[in-house]
Length: 283
Image (cartoon, rainbow, N blue to C red; front, top):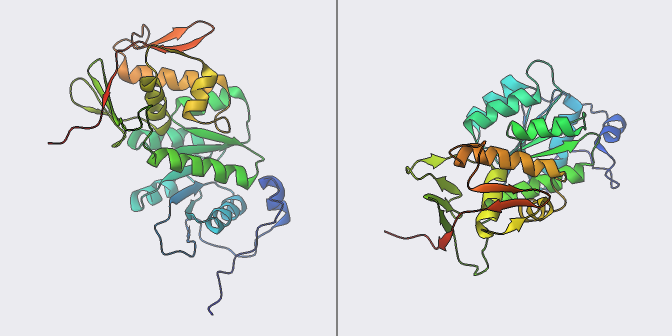
């Protein structure tokens, strides 16, 4: 029987990543941009890990690979863009504090050309930094030090959300029409009244879906967090405020005086539109 890949076992206690890297100094010297493939013939989700610390990115790549994901590593912005041009990825894990272009700059650059889910890794665990990341287009964040199991859970949640078709109460509706807009859940597409497609991040799409599924009802931030992310994901109220602000810039004629998504003081948000739902038409 052929030998398996020569990867060191992951500690059973799954210590926080900062501790794990001090305990496991790697002797191998892989190329900065390398691909770690799990032993599977099925199509695997492809993750891009961008971190200037060789030990961190290699340990993360091995851990994620051990759990069934295909992983490509990059040590900074230049290699990230090279890998992004050569491969199709499902999620990007991006460190914030890197020399040269930092994670915020790279996040903004990625978001300008793709709606791929982005998870930021940051040692600066302040609300201001998290909000900046979300405003620049990130979908989630993980504060260092972190347990690799937490990052794996967040990646899997992103993958589920990116491929899931949300269900309405009837369980069959996959298209919503409101104020001339069309939200197609099956295609994960938003079309403007002019017939042009509007790019949304994963978080923005899921938030708009939650609002369209609950029109003319006040939804608190906690309710929206549960509907969009689940309680284990983004866990600060302002993350919803940031996503709402980004949505308004894309669907409101005047984001400063929104007509579709109203703020209810001490209540949350109210989607004012009359929403018609139905399965996609064929023709």
